[in-house]
Amino acid sequence: MNKKFITFFKDPITKESLLFFLFEINFENIIAGVFLNETTGTVYPVTEGVPLMLPDSVTKDFHKKYEEQFGEFKKRFPAAKTNISDKKNSWSFSLEWESHFDKDLETTWGMTVPERYGQFLLENQVPEADLKNKIIFDAGSGNGKLTEYISQKNDCLIFGLDFSESVFKAEHNRKSDNVCFVQGDLQHLPFDDNFFDIIFSNGVLHHTPDTYTTFKSVAQSVKPGGSFYMWLYCRKGSIPWRLKRRWFDFLRAIISRTPPFIQKLAVNIHTTLSYGLQYLTGKKVKRSFNEIRIDMYDSITPRWRYYHEPLEVSKWFFDCGFGAGILTHWDNPFGFGILSFKNKADKTPGTNFKSSE
Image (cartoon, rainbow, N blue to C red; front, side, top):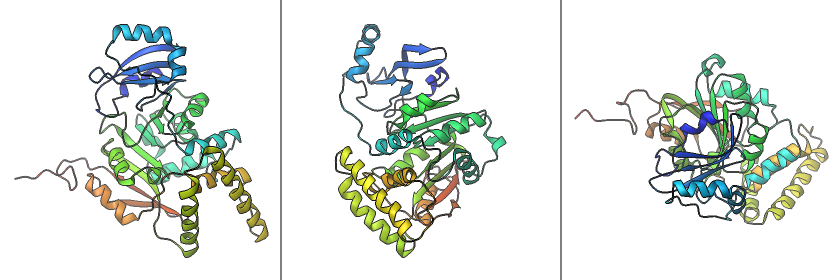
């Protein structure tokens, strides 16, 4: 994390300002340190350059490595809660992105990074020139390749947040000073409300405990006049898609509750079957075995997977003070993309509305 990002973080629970205590730095890049909420005593560590904006994130290894710095920190802030936790944030997508990095895949969802960038511009209805000086948020950044690419192509600041451990690999590969990868929870963002000019989220919100609750949390962080784009699975669709969805949901209900090695085995078996079936039916195989494996992780291992409709999501936007939803992505049968702009005026429908009485 470049040190320019320090002042942007807030406590994800209380939204209060945080103090930062530096442990290790390499030129302009912070390697380790801790954020502190002086009011509550809550501590959020930065390790391997990644802010961990989650409760109980100070691990035994981190404390041991920076034992001397922790001692100095406790002298200055004796009320700080530096309880050591061995708890790991379990998230099935860690396995998915681990496989992506291990296989060194050049594509994500069948697209190269430049292709995904072109789609980002189209879906968010933003000319490339208008990205200058914007603050952008990738809500569920995954492997971080698109997040990094946007920062390299434009003079803007961009945050990529994910609950999975993919953020550590993304940070390790980071070359731009204008991108910051964060491990956090989309339902409790470590940023001010009305902070981002552009927020986009591709296929992530429907994999959280409650899509609408997560949506409201993220929507609060959009500036008046800013935009929010997301892609979600669609409840409707063709009969083959509905049958396929029901089969995957059945498998997911079982496999998502199994240990990681069982999940990996199940994914490899179903990838082999899917890959082989395409040959047996005479279909042209458009993606490699490893690319199909990534898709299979997304289909049968997530703990949560919900389906929605455009009209339903348009009402969500309306309730949160946004304008009409704009459908921008119908190029596959599985889901839809929807974009909306937050109203600039206070006297608008939704939560921003104020009665004149």
